[in-house]
Image 1 (cartoon, one colour):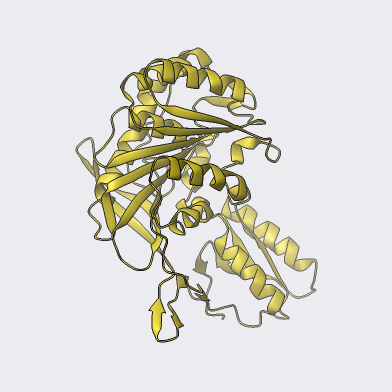
Image 2: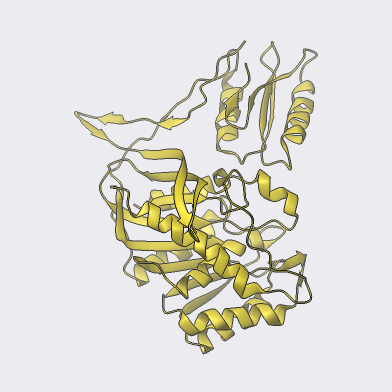
Length: 364
């Protein structure tokens, strides 16, 4: 039996006689009230460790095309993005809206039939969840509730746009990466004219300065369509700077990602500076992890294990008694992750490979 620590934490490092803080990462269940209903929403908070009140960034996830994939989603998908914000001095929370991941509550974001979608209703329902999370987070002693930004990707970006049309207290900025709704398949959106109309409706009441980013090769919402979103929004009174980024990967819809960070963080920094929202940086630190590795894991295995811990859920790490290992992250389900990790492990050994960690839980 191998013992693994199920918690990964950031330690304090001594610099001379002074302890300087790294980033704190906390998996939590946020207690919120939405439409009069008390609910618990799955969340991950990443923040500077000095405990001084800092501005709040809320990261809002997208929506998979396949409904059965909603239950497999996790806040950890956006861990790398959250760290980028936290390293810039922001308390950052990623959470699962109702009907996603392990969050309580029914799924309320359906747009209806493809030929007659109600995008406005869907966007406002998503925004209700964001608003509730902001209200809960503003009560934290380490949050400066007077400075809040909402950041979203895809359906999360659309939720952010909707939020600006009925902003909660403290909301001073909003960023939408590839924002939209209703992508049925690559380069096809259900009744796009209705989606454009929803953006126009939100623009009538939105006065929060926004940043919108779409990649040249986005196959959910093309820049040509996105520019129509933008035109409808600003012509109605909304404020949004539009950026068409260069092509990114096979589908630029994934620009807001760890791999895309060298690109999107430039846009982020410019926006924060323009809006005078640049936060005080955390104290300089040598952030180190305290990790219990699986017994018998060599240097290459330990390097792989750290990457595994940072990976998206639906993941598995397997080992053989001779130290051979295999791992896979971000698969469609746990069984697939275990199967593929085991196949990887067996390529390098004749010994039996068994799972030692599934997601972030040790296998005993």
